[in-house]
Image 1: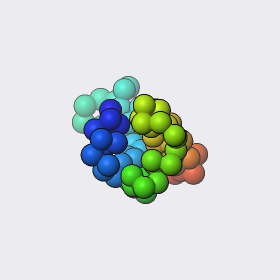
Image 2: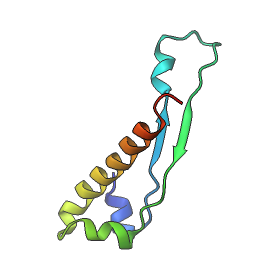
Image 3: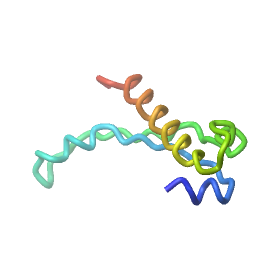
Image 4: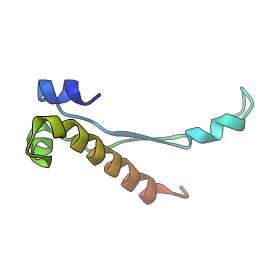
Length: 79
Protein backbone atom coordinates (compact mmCIF):
# COMPACT_ATOMS: atom_id res chain seq x y z
CA UNK A 1 0.00 0.00 0.00
CA UNK A 2 1.21 3.47 -0.85
CA UNK A 3 -0.71 4.93 2.09
CA UNK A 4 2.22 4.50 4.45
CA UNK A 5 4.62 6.28 2.08
CA UNK A 6 2.17 9.13 1.52
CA UNK A 7 1.48 9.54 5.23
CA UNK A 8 5.21 9.52 6.03
CA UNK A 9 6.01 11.71 3.02
CA UNK A 10 8.64 9.09 2.16
CA UNK A 11 10.21 8.38 -1.21
CA UNK A 12 8.90 5.42 -3.20
CA UNK A 13 11.43 3.30 -5.10
CA UNK A 14 9.82 1.25 -7.90
CA UNK A 15 11.42 -2.14 -8.61
CA UNK A 16 10.84 -4.19 -11.77
CA UNK A 17 11.60 -7.92 -11.79
CA UNK A 18 11.77 -9.20 -15.36
CA UNK A 19 11.91 -12.89 -16.24
CA UNK A 20 10.38 -14.29 -13.07
CA UNK A 21 7.58 -15.93 -15.09
CA UNK A 22 10.22 -18.29 -16.54
CA UNK A 23 10.42 -19.99 -13.14
CA UNK A 24 6.94 -21.51 -13.44
CA UNK A 25 7.94 -24.36 -15.74
CA UNK A 26 11.55 -24.92 -14.62
CA UNK A 27 12.98 -27.65 -12.48
CA UNK A 28 14.24 -26.67 -9.06
CA UNK A 29 17.98 -26.67 -9.85
CA UNK A 30 17.81 -25.21 -13.35
CA UNK A 31 19.28 -21.73 -13.82
CA UNK A 32 17.00 -18.99 -15.04
CA UNK A 33 18.06 -15.43 -15.82
CA UNK A 34 16.05 -12.84 -13.94
CA UNK A 35 16.70 -9.12 -14.23
CA UNK A 36 16.08 -6.77 -11.33
CA UNK A 37 15.75 -3.07 -12.10
CA UNK A 38 15.72 -0.49 -9.34
CA UNK A 39 14.10 2.58 -10.85
CA UNK A 40 14.44 6.26 -10.05
CA UNK A 41 12.90 7.12 -6.68
CA UNK A 42 9.74 9.19 -6.58
CA UNK A 43 10.07 11.78 -3.85
CA UNK A 44 7.09 13.18 -1.98
CA UNK A 45 7.59 16.61 -3.57
CA UNK A 46 7.17 14.96 -6.99
CA UNK A 47 4.27 12.59 -6.35
CA UNK A 48 2.22 15.02 -4.26
CA UNK A 49 1.72 16.97 -7.50
CA UNK A 50 0.00 13.99 -9.17
CA UNK A 51 -3.43 14.87 -7.80
CA UNK A 52 -5.29 17.53 -5.86
CA UNK A 53 -6.69 15.31 -3.10
CA UNK A 54 -4.94 13.11 -0.55
CA UNK A 55 -7.52 10.37 -1.13
CA UNK A 56 -6.60 10.18 -4.82
CA UNK A 57 -2.88 10.41 -4.15
CA UNK A 58 -2.34 6.73 -3.38
CA UNK A 59 -4.15 5.73 -6.58
CA UNK A 60 -2.24 8.28 -8.65
CA UNK A 61 1.04 7.15 -7.11
CA UNK A 62 0.24 3.50 -7.88
CA UNK A 63 -0.52 4.37 -11.49
CA UNK A 64 2.72 6.34 -11.81
CA UNK A 65 4.78 3.43 -10.45
CA UNK A 66 2.99 1.02 -12.80
CA UNK A 67 3.74 3.36 -15.72
CA UNK A 68 7.43 3.49 -14.77
CA UNK A 69 7.67 -0.30 -14.52
CA UNK A 70 5.89 -0.81 -17.86
CA UNK A 71 8.31 1.65 -19.48
CA UNK A 72 11.23 -0.31 -18.03
CA UNK A 73 9.80 -3.55 -19.42
CA UNK A 74 9.42 -2.05 -22.91
CA UNK A 75 12.97 -0.68 -22.84
CA UNK A 76 14.47 -4.01 -21.76
CA UNK A 77 12.43 -6.56 -23.73
CA UNK A 78 14.63 -9.06 -25.47
CA UNK A 79 17.68 -8.47 -23.25
